[in-house]
Length: 193
Image 1: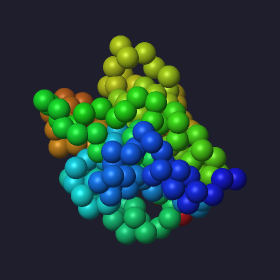
Image 2 (image 1 turned 90 degrees about the vertical axis):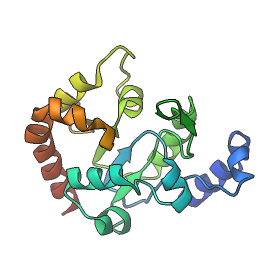
Image 3 (image 1 turned 45 degrees about the vertical axis):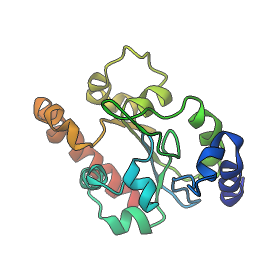
Image 4 (image 1 turned 120 degrees about the vertical axis):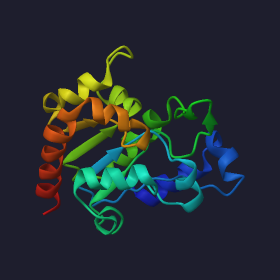
């Protein structure tokens, strides 16, 4: 099993990440050998990068609510791991954050995953994570995948992004709150017991 600290140092010194290292920006993810639940999202946001804390915004608050856990369990239990599709804030585009860099997750995730042998459930949050890990075509609609989430259990649990920008989606898809979230909370509680 690889050492998590060694992988972290390799990520920091990777020439592909030199522009971040030059600005003293560290890769942002959480990996522990005792993790039971893994959250794979898009990439850290600007606030996450500035504070050095993943999911440290309203989206994170909503995600923790969806899971039925508090900040202490999320950040301090050692049972939650977070591997974004890119470990650095990609910048801002016309309609929000830019996408994660292509190939980043394929390069680093397998090594980190091999150092976390006790993951029992992986939450795929948003289209980048869902399409990468479930090997879906870009034409596949995220709503359909999330609605059919049981097909991907027990390994993966696909979710929409918990961004406040998705409030309209939540309103238009009441089945998510009524059916999906109770199942997610139950599975989370069972794993974290």
